[in-house]
Each structure stands twice: as structure tokens, then as C-alpha cells.
Length: 358
Image (cartoon, rainbow, N blue to C red; front, side):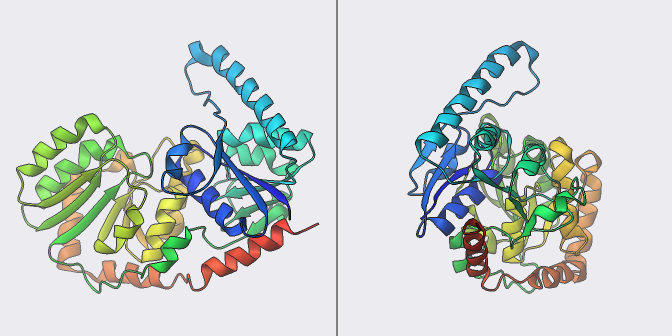
């Protein structure tokens, strides 16, 4: 039995795969999981004994830089002694700045490192640590940013989804329903762009189409304002800030408007729901754009750059879609061609093989 540490934190795109790796390995190995304060909220409904070591994001505020550097050094020292005290054999890092102190400490302590990269562009932390790692687990071999030499460390796996998702049926809607059922989500953090623009879109859309809407609101101070706007329309709607079990409701919707975090669109694709991807334009290395483009190239989604989002064009898009659903149905067919049969067991076997390597 090996002592394995999973280092995760930050957004749900890092934490949820970390929790999933934990569940794949917990029965056969002594597994620990460590996160930061920001990532701890994703453990609320998981009976997992986590440890918290907070790692500050350096950010762009130069006035706070000296304090943050001191905190990073403290995080590194805590990480180093955590690994040493617990005699960790293997570190699995799900990426992001919060994993850097653990990865650096593991290098010094000569602990095996396995990286996980869910995006179509390799993250900066993963790229920096890659030469010191055994393998990098990812969904395709030609990640943007990988050299030919680095590709030798790629270990391909199926998409990491929580075990609970595989117990749910995929969407079987054969055409857009009446009323049109829309879900708007901005990833685990929400999206202020959606807060500002979706109410305008829904107001116009409701003039020619019956709408049922569920929308994630990033800025909780705006909930009352958005509530007031929607209450004046003849629509059924629900607003929320965060829902750890949102995936259980995906099957209720015809179309999802979303950011393009890897975990979010992997879940949506599992359920076979065509989605409108509006990538967060300030994501590092524009990785959300390339995440969405992967599905666009398979004709599974629509992709709109945020700076090209136009209310009139969106209304025209929905009018055309409702009049002729061929494009919608083609996208559903293409999503359903992405096989998830026996995926949990296949990933389980692959992950176990990996950590049992000499």
C-alpha cells in the first residue's frame, strides 16, 4: 500500500478531478488530499478528510507582492514538512498555482510526481514541473504548448468525471422543447459577463419564445436586480450562486450557455446537451477557448468570443434555431457519438496501473 498525496485547490476545475482521483485510489492505497481555502468549498458534500494549506495567488497588485512572497515561502515550508512527516511516496498534482509548493518540495524530496492537465493547453505550473515528473495525465496527446520531447510523458485517459455522474442517464430529448429550457452557468466561479448580458438576451427572447431559465449569478449583490428584471417577464426562472450538485439537473435543459472550463464542458458533453460556449477571455494562455474549440471541431457546440457577443445576432441565432432544428440535432448526434461506456472502470484501471509502476 503506497502513501499518495493529491494536491489540488483553487477552482472546481482543479478540485473536482482531485476528489475523483482520491475516490479511484482510496480503497487500495493510503491516500491524503490537500487543498487551499478557495478550493475547500468544493468538499462540502464529500466525506473526505482533507487538509488545508493555503497558497496565495501572486496576482497583479505590486503593493501586496512582498507579503505574498513571504506567504508563498511559508506555504513551501509547510508543504515540505507535510510531505516529509507523512512519508508520501507519490504526489498527484491537478495543476494550478496552489500545487507549486508541493511539487517543488516533492522534487527536493525525490518523490514521484504525476501531473494532471484537463485543458487543451498545458498550464504554466504543469509545464514548469513536467521535466521533473513521471507522467502527465491528459485527454489528448498533442496538447498546445508541449514539445515533441515532452509528449513522451503523456499518459492518455478518458475524461475525469465524478462517479455519481455515471449513474445518471444521458439526455434523450429528440428536439427543442416548448418552453425552451435554458441553463446559464459561468463555471464554479460564475461569470459577471453573464450577469450583465443574459437578462438583456432573455428579455428579447421571451417576446417570441416561451422560456424556462436557470441562471448562475456571480455577483450576489445583483440577485435582487436580476430578480426584478425577470419578474417583469412572463417566464419561469431560478437564480443561484453555487450548486455542487448542478450536474443532476443538466438533463432538464435543451441548451446550456456556459464558460469553457474543462470539467464543466466534460460534464455537459456526457449528458449530450448542445451548448453555447463563451470562453473566459482572460484565462491563462486562452485555454478556455481551446477547450471549447475541441468540441467545436467535432460539431458539438457553438463558440462565441466574448468580445464578439452581440445581442441582435444572438436573437437571430435563436430564431433560426427554433425554426430549423437540424443544426441542434446534428450536435446532439455528435455528442452522443462520444462514448462514455464503462469509463469509470477504465479510468480506475489506468490510474491504478500508473501508481503501481516501479
